[in-house]
Length: 387
Image (cartoon, rainbow, N blue to C red; front, side, top):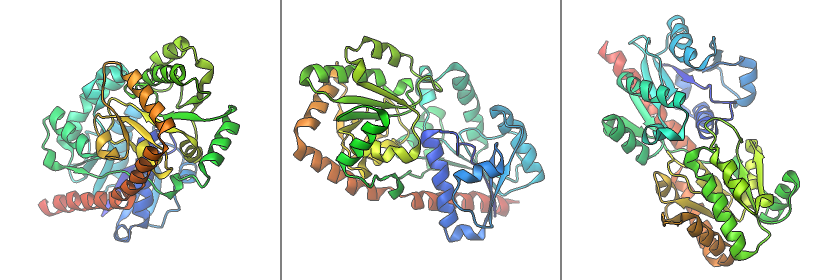
């Protein structure tokens, strides 16, 4: 079979979506059975440029630049036009697929989460309109639907009145490249040096969108500082003012009497993240809605305690290995208490981090790619046999 994959997320600093796409390609390259198929990796940047961000590709993988590159124009004009001249058996996209696609081509879409449907205020109006308008049409056309958790599968089924039995779950994972080789102290010292501050720190990494509840973290940190009188810092990793940025973060920072102890790093390259996790007292992730929650696994592999909301897919990922917020009336105070517990109860922290390391065995990029290839084969061969 000939399989085309939309890899535009690679090289775009798209956090979880980019990580998913990169590892899918990486594991398909290694997969023995995939060697009997040919793959077109479709991007909107120069082939020589994108190859710098990809693993070494065998001869059955080709990178193709498809132009023009405008986001909407690419999906609805450039892509179907390209495929008309370069026919494939299967096309794999994320979220929205083209409408004017030859019926002989099987369409597979990955929908990571449907937060835009749950609460339109979490993203801007343009993105909300686009996703709410075009995902139902994509689902109607799709021959295969993938998602990253059992929670997301049920949410897609519930919110779009779609048969959950037609949605396949392919969990993301982490690999050894996301593990710091340093001790906790060495990693902390490296982070101190790079970001120009001293001492211990709590950590949050995300897109800094409203559903990440970063203002709540800032309030909890302030409450913890008052309680503990500690010199600890709060490190917030993510692009300030980025896509769908939560402006309430700035207001919470301005209102904090400990603003000098809150470090905004901006976007941080992937190779720097392991040391950030490894050196942290805890990773704080009180998100209201996640399709999966990959930072939990990134924390586990670096033996970092994790605090999460008991919401959405996070319990599915975290299991018994994390500290849960229970949505108390003042959750910022509850979070401050857990931060205090982590600082004081090293035996409990050790038990949790041990459970986290054990839990990593449940998630594998190789299995994710293997299951995805099975979907390609199922939908591709099904269409061929029906013709």
